[in-house]
View 1: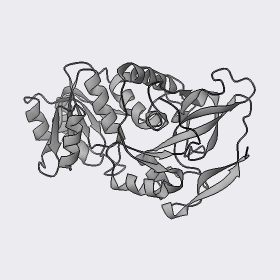
View 2: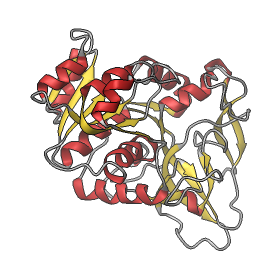
View 3: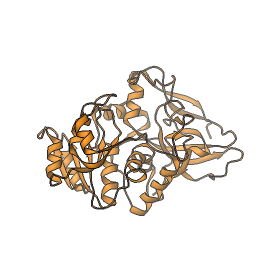
Length: 344
């Protein structure tokens, strides 16, 4: 068996600097596992890192990008107790954030730490959880960032329940996970999109209402009309920037806004008086901890939830996958890596 593998390396900012390299397979140290990667899911964060768009938090280059992986444990280091060889696992987004409050010692895979775009990766055993039994590798790889972000916003911190209304902006991975989880908990779902075709597709997934962003410039007013003037209980703020003004106007009194995305910029602003009168809870969501990911995995198996995958790319087509991510996707973009796929 060959002791070499392929992995993607980002030498400098820009997708043109992504290179598919050959390297030695990693060996596990004490407390570590080696995982044969089956699939990697890409996030908007990965696009920002590859482009070098976040000047305040630049990654250490050269770097293997991407945080989200599903695969099979291939080797164990000394002292490993959480896994056995042959276990199907997924990575955690934050290495070292196990439960409770986020702490400064936690680090991100694919940024502060090497990422998952490789045929084999080595992880501390604390940085992985068992994969859902009901999903294949491509589907399972979408959970660590997008799936957990939606779960952390709605369930871990948002106390979602039947009878509420949840509004999600766009039809990317986090938005569609939010729509699916909200519907599973008995909430109505409003989706905003500039594409009538995507609005049709989200209705087929169970969304209650769709608002065309292009046809209806005042989406906040439209959302209030759809709720009989009451407003929305929970909003996924995925655009950022000045869009937060509209989110505050669309919110029900005492409602919640989860700050998640930065599509319209890294700075956000909100109107003061509507905020005073509306008494919103505005909370930043930085993905979530390992315990919540384990909760999500159990829920996925119980609900038989199927993540929405737009397109799956071959391992040698990562630049094409990133270009698709930049154009926008309906759900998730996944890279097929593995020598052997996990079985659902």
